[in-house]
Amino acid sequence: MGERKKRFSLIHLFLLFTLIFPSALPAIDQKIAQTIDQEIEKNRAEIIKIRRFIHMNPELSNREYETARLVANKLSSLGLEVKSGIARTGVVGLLRGGLPGPTVAIRADMDALPIQEQNTFPYRSLNPGVMHACGHDVHTSIALGAAMVLSTIKDKIRGNVKFIFQPAEEGAPAGEEGGAALMIKEGALENPPVRAIFALHVWPDLDAGKAGYASGYIMASSDNFTITIKGKSAHGARPQEGIDAIVIAAEVVSSLQTIISRSLDPTEPVVITVGKIQGGVRSNIIADKVVLEGTVRTLNEDVRNKIPGLMENIVKGITQSYGASYTLEYEKQLPPLYNHPEFVQVVLPGLKSCLGEDNLVQVKPQMVAEDFAYFAERIPAFMYLLGVKTPGQTNVAPLHSPNFNPDERAIPVGIKAMCHLVLNALEQQASLKSSSTDSLLR
Image (cartoon, rainbow, N blue to C red; front, side):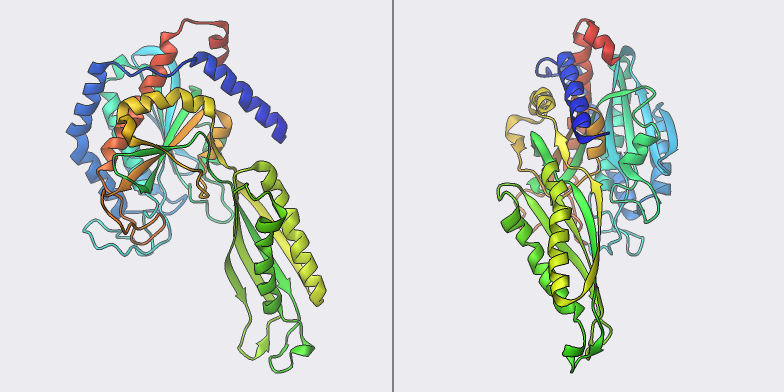
């Protein structure tokens, strides 16, 4: 689908959606809110136990076999309709409410990272070189906790809640499909069709008990590139007889930053990072080849589309001036994650009511990426950032650190927020009279 056509379709979808959600979502019934709090407290110890078990047994992308089995078994025990093996190891659980209504979804990712954990607590990773360093163990536990809570009040739910447990958010192994795109491709948003979807990401910059949100872009696109510079080998003492690929690579690395400083609007956030350089065989030999690998992050699709050409111009000009050659491979990966402003206006009051206005923080767009963006391209979606920093802590390990250690007191907060978000959405739709527009979206 062309970019203009895709954007038009999304805008049309959001306009229809806001007709069904014409005003701020009301706070849910006080008795139901109390029941949610009671059920969270009742199940707190079990949910923490689940999170620690998942943390101790991390699995890499598209290899989340035991995690998926745990999730499927727990959902089945709660009486949900469960489908496994979606997008290889993904699991989808459907909680059918006792009253008629549409379907909304909660998405959680399950995969870990190839990192050797350096924490020393008793439930540290038992799998060498694999760690939940991005909080997906927390995401999975919160979604399971929400299923535990909502299943106790399913007779009062006006519609359905679909729980989507996704593999490979960190990226599928080479040569494999995976992640959100494959879950969508294999029907995770269908049967019954999902009308809106919610997700969270743990965030160590915010205290536990707080949540961050952004209206519009909240996370960046993510693209990868590989530049191969081909020179000519020679003795290190006779450089005039060779073409030094290392010298050329150094100039390329520096010059790529001029794309940001001189070729693009300085008000547009862009990151170009060369994260890997490989070249040369010995200290006294002129290198004949250097390979550069890196990532590009943007918040603007038009800017994103300009960057490959600008990179090509720089690499071509530098290599030609030295008499070298090159190849540039540029791979578009994740689109930017967009919280549509109209939908944010709809969900925000309910979140404020649930967590307290002082605990809700507007955040700047982040240059990290999330494949939840694929869901947001299809249906109204809202991702928020869940604080996991211990209040008062000053030295906090970031995401993807071998010392990452989220404060588990955030888990009940995440469960409560998710329960309120989905129930508010379903209640709002049910409170409106049927209309021709309503029937279009059923």
